[in-house]
Length: 235
Image 1: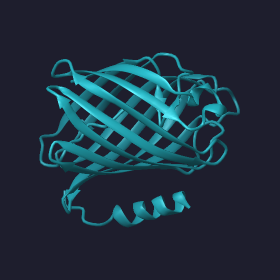
Image 2 (image 1 turned 90 degrees about the vertical axis):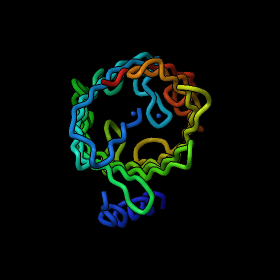
Image 3 (image 1 turned 135 degrees about the vertical axis):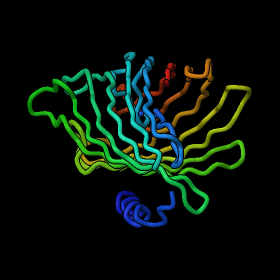
């Protein structure tokens, strides 16, 4: 049911009103000069949708992105993982950010590969993402829908729907909370969440401390609660 509903939202919303990693994509609105951006970072655990991708161990990640003045963008990413015999996951992504009806939208398609995965494991997958973003004064909100028709490893089709709210706590300090639901074939269905804060150490460097949890602790260590610290540099 959740998959049918969210796919319907995607199909109806994407063509209309085109007027202009829990990691969060940088938002680039149309009209800005075209430019390149770069991102490097590390964390105590690679958490995605509440679950660990690095076996609860530290990881590093990086990204290079081209941002066009029209709002289109493309990027190449990597992150270290520990899954299916692979220790590196790469991704190529293309998307479009635009505004309409008082909202900001971000839609993208990406292709992922797990380098050196054990023979017989599904080491590549297409994923599709759609964000609806709304600023409410100092608070910003986001609804995100992600879907893959055939996921990585043993996971087949899956859908993730999450809501996030982010708010200022102090100068250069922002708090946020995220709640999401993942339904998938070949792997457990679960609800995931995180709450934490990010501090802008410098103009290009941010520190993040966040508590991640799921309701699927009995499915393995990757679903257990964890406090995760990370640092990211964007330039």
